[in-house]
Image (cartoon, rainbow, N blue to C red; front, side):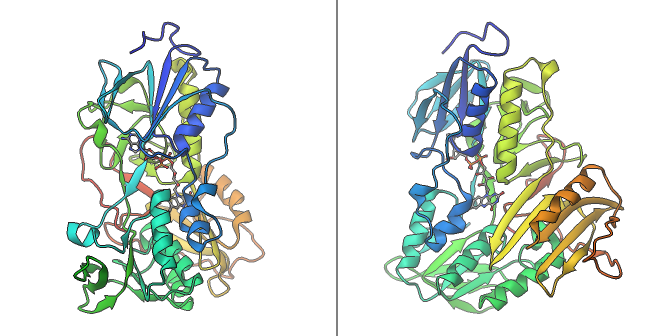
Amino acid sequence: MTAADATGRGGAGRIVVVGASLAGLRAAEALRDEGFTGELILIGEEPHEPYDRPPLSKAVLSGWLTTDHTTLPRVRDIGARWLLGTAATGLDVPGRQVVLADGRRVGYDRLLIATGTRARPWPERAGGELDGVHLLRTRDDADRLRAALTAGPSRVLVIGAGFTGGEVASGCRELGHEVTVTQRSRAPLASALGGVIGRAAAGWHRDAGVDLRLNTTVDALEGDAHGRLRRARLSDGTTVDAEVALVATGALANTEWLADSGLAADPRGVACDGACRALAADGTPAGDIFVAGDIARWPHPLYPGQLLRLDHWDNAIAQARTAAHNMTRPAHDHRVHRPLPAFWSNQFGINLKSVGLPTVADQVMVTQGSLDQRRFVAAYGLQGRLVAAVAVDSPRVLDGYAALIEAKAPFPPVLNASDGPAHLAPVDAAFPRHHTPDSAAVAAPPSPISGPVPATHP
Ligand SMILES: Cc1cc2nc3c(=O)[nH]c(=O)nc-3n(C[C@H](O)[C@H](O)[C@H](O)COP(=O)(O)OP(=O)(O)OC[C@H]3O[C@@H](n4cnc5c(N)ncnc54)[C@H](O)[C@@H]3O)c2cc1C
């Protein structure tokens, strides 16, 4: 264990980062940029150097990229000690120590929690352990899925039509596989983007030849005598024969190691304030412990009354930088983390980009382009205010919408766009009741410790 940071903030002492992926690496780089010259230790459960996850369900799945080419580029030398292949299993806050799986204890003066999320496993153990049943979160997952696809399955079953499910279904069709997708709600992406884009996405799936089963869940995954997946029993009484299944039913925050820490941590994530400072269970800042990336739940000034958790690449980087700044500054010099949520996905030859927070909307309308042309922008409103916009194959216009959302512009927005519809026609946003987004924004109640734990099945 090290002595406490004698300088208060800034250059000295030891900073430990738990979670050596996108947020952890970018935070470490930003710490050096901010002038931190002390000791830096990165602890990561995976044996790999930090790598990029978005390609795993896109270029890697399609075979354009191998996982060893997903390593994240280093922006600068961080002069860190790396403890890879080593999980943190506990946190002793009064003693300022991280406990590792091998029993070692690593002292810190300041700590960054960046342990992200993992794919929600198949709920029934025997089905989940069948050979051929896959999850997709890590590069090892991607290698296994890719190998299974290369073996030439007669059909791939994708359980869940959120972003990951849609991208994998799309990639599998590109590879020529027969694909069945099951979706609990009445449209793909409906949990994250609502009914209008959901209905459009159903068209993209079907036009690509996907056997799309809506309002349908998988009751059981069944195998043969050798433990290999053979079929799935669906809630509508039918069966689907498949040798490969991807379970894409949302994410769980990696918070188990914080169970006895006294922090406001649960399966939804770790609650922090706008300055990325971790909160204790009583809602007060825990002191010298910060949070960034997919695991963080924090209050966004544009969307009050809730804590956001975003499974968004852009947010992981921005929050890592804010946390690094604040870790090296006294409280009066702290920045507030408040970038507009932004997300992208590529599936079925379509580029989809989102700004703002669609999930809070009560209305949606197409403001540019048309659904038929598969090139449009949908604007989302909440009680007469613009809160989000999603562009389908028209990413460049989104900056204008982002500025309007930041300015709390009215909904419907006044755009005067030459490709706008003759009549503005807002409709119900049509999010499934009790919707729980996959790889998107999860808005949760403001209390860091109470309230239901949202499931993330899309
Ligand atoms: C298949 C896929 C496709 C995606 N596509 C997109 C996309 O198109 N657009 C987009 O915006 N976002 C996308 N994302 C999301 C994006 O990758 C994440 O937002 C980003 O990876 C978050 O980074 P992070 O560092 O916060 O968390 P993670 O990347 O999850 O990293 C957390 C790290 O902490 C480690 N860890 C966990 N527990 C412990 C522990 N106890 N001790 C030590 N280490 C631990 C984990 O092993 C992991 O390496 C995608 C994600 C996936 C999985």
